[in-house]
Image (tube, rainbow, N blue to C red):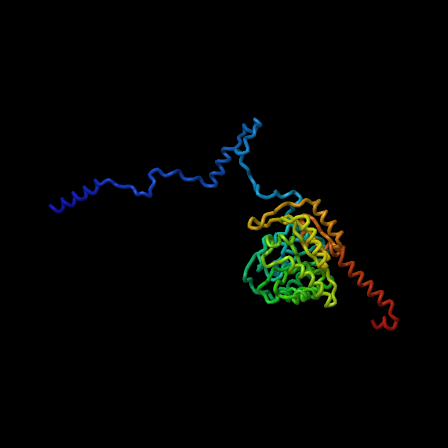
Length: 393
């Protein structure tokens, strides 16, 4: 009994001891911070009222709620484009899905996809992207997926590509590709095989190949593509030399790109073939006027035949920002400048891309004329032969 009483007394004495708050606990915690969504609604509640609109009084600048992106130029109306539709567009898209082929039109979010795919028979243009949809490079302007170890090449891709193109009835096809630094030849043999198969199935179609720079792979791989039967060998310098390190992947180089274009001409000539070379320049990435002049001069020194100018458009917020939106009048100016420097053909405009309406441009302006001239020359040579030799020919 005594033990029970002593235990009860001990419990009462412990209960009488005043409690202490921990030093880390704030007895008067601050009010919880409002969420981002709540703050937005509070700003709207504190903004203009219907009475403010009636009175016509505008609050001071620091009291206004500013909406939209104020950190880069606003997209001009001349760069806005309609949603792609049409029977030709739908047919090409369905065919691509069925054969498991990729296009840079879709992967790079090109604004002209509806116009190019929707062209009439013989005038529509599509740009097939070879060697998968994962690139080993990571250029700051490009929305194509990047991977250090892309999947192996599809051995059926050259045949599937040629089969699809022969069905479409296109007048002009552009082949491009991801960079494949992981391959011994950079994918040159794969590209050349695709071109050869297209020419076998559709001899009259004009083929342009927009190639990687094949850095560290040697000049022979460039010659492999250039002598494969294509009509236009394209490789883009993309921007002026000063901006190259900030725009393109660190493994790309301005001088390397010029060398690719020079070697393409040499390789084709050595194989007894005549090709056009082509390059493209994006405006609106921070270039200066004198640098554009210098770039054009260097391209002409490298015997480039065709150049295109287009506006850089930021594909996503993860990519580099637009420095400025170039007015159509400035694009017209650069077209005149380039033509005056001796380029065989120049396409220049805000929505022009490397392969934009390529079929329409080249079929009407360059390649068909060259083919006709070659045929006329062959006929004239034949007519000068003695009758017995001409009959054998």
